Length: 197
Length: 98
Image (cartoon, rainbow over all chains, first blue to last red; front, side, top):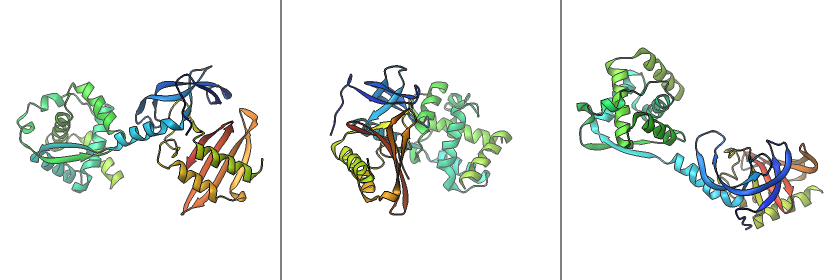
């Protein structure tokens, strides 16, 4: 197996320069083409002329695979039992079965993270009585954008714990769908259920 | 260079680890070899099964002295599309997907 070192050079096609140029191997943070995440500090061939990443040596592919696996890994949270009841009721309200909970949560988190549904008020909901209770049930979510979306939401809401954030999101969904019956949010969530049903 | 030579060369590159993957300032998640979805030996196996009629080549549009090689072949019901060029001593994969 050929192993390259930082500082090694080779010739490769640079799509930014639209030419074969010299590339130098450097450690870079490189995003995925679908913007689902970034492989940090990975050895790549960088064009000497335009500084674009032109080539990935095969020795870097395990780091790429590992990052993709991290993104796909299920996110497990333990929440009070009534949180799952809330999600079940939300799903029923939206005309879907309870099997839609993971998909619905994932999309709701994405909408909150992208500010398509305002996330303000989530920290306040964590002080409510419904936020309390022994964590007795497991909520498992999986998705390539989930970790990034949750990290972004943590920054926006200033909630550090993932479990607290999940609880806050469930309570926000409860507030939106079952208490205030927010028509705009319900319409968006019904569209999601229609898409994944 | 004929198909047999091209095939031998790329399989030798895969066997010896003289391979890299073309990127466009990000990591192409559709390249199943660069993302580790398929292994080097699997790609070598697929290329090894291909025949001359599965193969085509054309000059690289950045440098016409460099050929871009393409194998389109069906293995276990999947249509594989494998595209690469050679800059000695390496083969640089542009696409590996099905």
